[in-house]
Length: 431
Image (cartoon, rainbow, N blue to C red; front, side, top):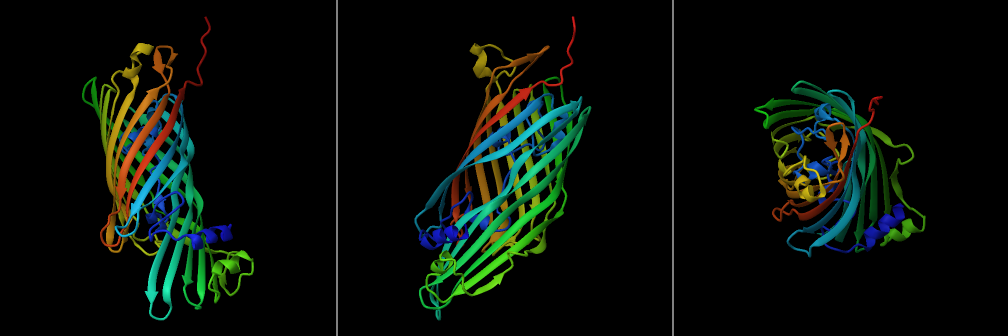
């Protein structure tokens, strides 16, 4: 496995910021690119959800929303990501990938009490970078950087609603492995070097949330939401391999299996270290008019300055402002002739900064999203009508800039999701 990856690195001669894998050139810092943990509805609404609750949709942003869950709900989505990166000097590099997103199932336990469980990506790393420099002694120096892997989260949460107030909590088991490699290849007979670092993560994190609904009249209501995540120390196993050789093509040495001059190799007994996962907090406000028009806004921030494993950058405060809206002409309409009235139309806007500083500059991230929810056949339970949705979403965004030696990434994301609702645990009535 190591040989194949290294071979790709040596043969790779594209631009200085070219990358591969599943992410961004900025994923080389910290834990990688953090995943927003959204389902289909949230994707189309700018990754909002702190102050949203629904009887038919799961919401990972605030576990307090589970108190309003009325149906057994299964939600799954997949995301395709296309990125074009440029630095203003070299030709743009681009890549496209697709991955499975969040999977979750929610169950109403009792009136006002619900629970959910599932699996979601936490962070992912994927980049290839080549940097060329000139040293007065060594001559031309080519440094090849490669990163891969990611972290996932298994979660379980619950929420309880009493009148207009809801509270909830969520426990997350974060696990996974990230790999970083660096190859220094010289155009002279000086010693080449290869360094591989592998980090394995496993730990529990905890999130808490609350919501308060403020009904104005029968048609209009507002919801206030707040979330807080506890600071945790994550357990990390760290293994390192360092190899050096005077041969000009290091790949020949590794590929033949004759690895010479191993400087460090603790892969058999990795070190145990800890990494601080910082606390976070967020707040949101939602306006709901007749279940026809929903407008929501979120703010969230997380301080990463003491996290560690930043790898060449400075950790910083990560924060985001997200707004979103949904319009459904008539959610209760029935009949094929009224199908278009039940379609949900969504849009969203978000702006934030990544939790790092590169070359002394903050990395801004801006995105605009559009989405639609197409209802499937409605089911009837007593006097209730409920149904499932196919969720489609599209987002266009920009990360970074062309100033101060940074890389600008323009990206396009497509989301396909399914939300299935059903009524379980029905008490049968005998005539």
